Image 1 (cartoon, rainbow, N blue to C red):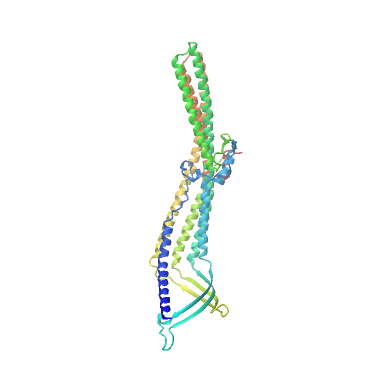
Image 2 (cartoon, rainbow, N blue to C red):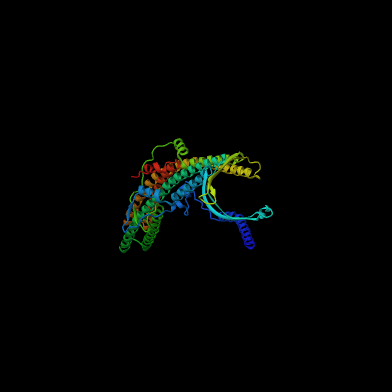
Length: 488
């Protein structure tokens, strides 16, 4: 009997030591595992399309459906609608919002009561001497074995003001992420508009290059005929032949660029891999709805989701600082349990405990002061970001107006230049056919036509992109960009 008691005592001590070591090691391991996890940062691109990098998620998408054998027509409206469903940047923004909601739920759990239930049945044998209770003479030192059955529910609740402030801050963070998701939709609209318009511009470049190649081939054949008739010199044939090959190279280059641009657009709107499509819309050229600079600035500060998100982040930082300060305030705690206890379920009797305590922080080793200083730093950063964004919005709106005005005038000049260059080419070909001039004048006129057409294509693209950028800078891209571009 004594040997069994000693063995049982030794095992108990070993279990207690292992439990104590585990209690010390597990928190360290948990902290280490959390700190070594790779952080997932949701990229937040800038508003300007020129600042969207090739690695931006807004140029990615989540393909949906299966590719069909035939080429499908794609309008600008269809491209925007698909982008708002399958663009990767918008998917990431939705994930960020879900993460913020989870953090708010965690903050809410600190405010709500925690209820647990447990049922236990144990058999014990106690050595009184081991606990400092020597048994009287003639009394055994060992008590038991005896059974204990306990079925009990416990409730804990903490009334702490800084928990409430943390929940308010988390709620404001959710609102900020929701506004960020709306801002991502605005960015998606601008990105898809840019990719579609650039695709139309490259399509126009292909058609222009094909027309120039046809003209160059006609001039080359005409030059050969004139040389065979003794009218043109051999240098004219060589010059026109070099010009023909140059136009062939130009056509190959723009066709390749056009195909790659279509791949970029298909990826951004989530088309199935390998799906062929054709642009259904022509390059738009509607008049811009009349809007003043003052009205555009007022709309931007009122409607832009990134500005409202930044203001929400400032509010969240202010609330977090209040929560850090309120850690110095007393807090009220309640602990209670109710259950039945006895040798077995048949002999159990109800028991309960109700305890109310007031906790007053006296000395926290500088933790509260550290939390307040850290909250102050975050608040200062959020305030600086808000002021910087306000200045950037003003710059973006004014830049959009300048680009819109300049590109509109460039379109007018480019249209006139194309007409004049075409007339110049006609006259140069007539003069060459009549033997008044050589092929050099015709080749130079062709180059002038090509340059004028490229200027017109680029200026039309810039003009329409400036319209989309103006809608984006005022925070109305999703609502008004279709009207700005005359989308059906």
